[in-house]
Length: 291
Image 1: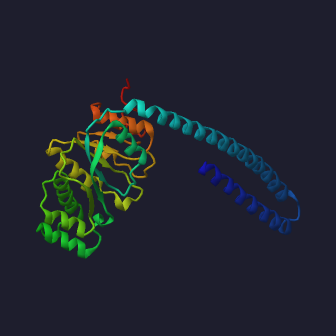
Image 2: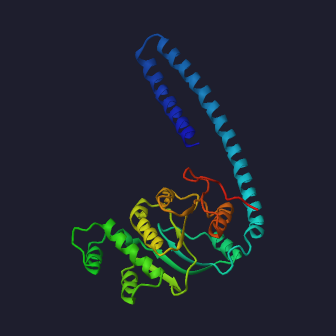
Image 3: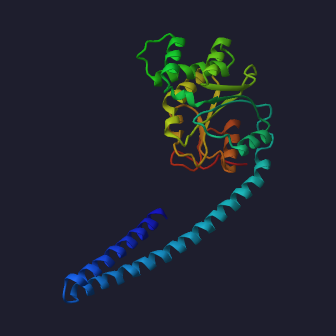
């Protein structure tokens, strides 16, 4: 659709240029040969222009129809969701990590609740994790007692390991206070409750917030050593996907948890149907097998 509109705008520009050419040509050239040629060219361009406008109108109609079909399917899936996930995760305790600044989909939380699962703790990665403030960078280096040439990417790996300790309730109070006082991580909930799994919500719309190869990768590695199940998820419309990075680890991924099929996939993956589910190129399967 965008390319088509660009093409139409280009044709309009050509019309204006040819019109100016006719005006100049009729003044300079005594006969009408140049003028006739330019008029024929304008006639051809006019035909292309109207043809493209008609095609654009057709595409708008088709897109509106497809959007309505997709909305109807989503409503249908939402209707089926409770009967498909109800009590599949009774007493399942979840720790959630939000990376990349993405909002937590309300539908995902609702699906987990219907399944009987409970999010008992939440850790949100804040914008200071980019470590672009020199004073903050210095404080982090001093806290971990590392050399001044240690890069921000390496420091984010240290921070990820610290977050894993907090999630598993193995961190001392000073570590937790440091992370929150410097607005690197915001913790909420109860980290003392034993977890059945950790849900990492990744994906970002801002490339400067993409720490998947440093923070997320190190966090998943540290949690894996604790023999805790980890699930990587993101929304279907995220600009920068984390799925490829997450799939380097032994974990299930769902790339459309903002939609009901992804929410159903998440519940079944947590119940014991591992895989890479969703609609993006990194997905291996749309959904798990349903009963």
